[in-house]
Length: 201
Image 1 (tube, rainbow, N blue to C red):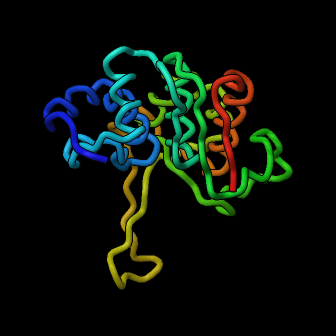
Image 2: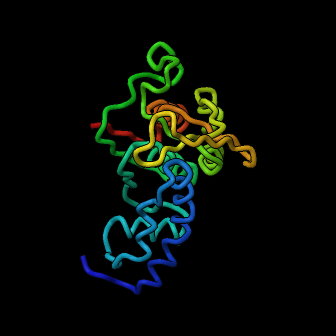
């Protein structure tokens, strides 16, 4: 591939799409979306940058396929957000197997949430899920967290410092990561089966 256009031109064209995607990743994973680096990386004329240019400048998809690498919470939320904007032919690639069960199957998930890797949903995460219409199906499977306990390096088990949050406009919720993925997959199957194809490894 060869570079075309200036860095400023690529940054300007990508900005609208990045503005949509970055809050989703920040809210769900508290980490910057990799696409944000497109504004500082050396611009290359590839299929990926071509699709970003098309969506950013016209708001529509004119040709080709959108591929989202990673079918975790941020990847699925991104795919749903793109489908809501009218994008078609969205493929989500995930190397892991799908979740072991649908989110409502209590016999599989059980009451012991500590058996699974938990993900915290703060204010931004809850807002992002509301914006893609998924929060109502996720919230019933969440537990509420009102504080945290931290240990300094080398501190004994009973040497943690507990903090209870009383000054936040929202309550942090936690859910098994795989169960959150199951909720988002259900939304894909129910509302966007004709636009999103999720492929597991």
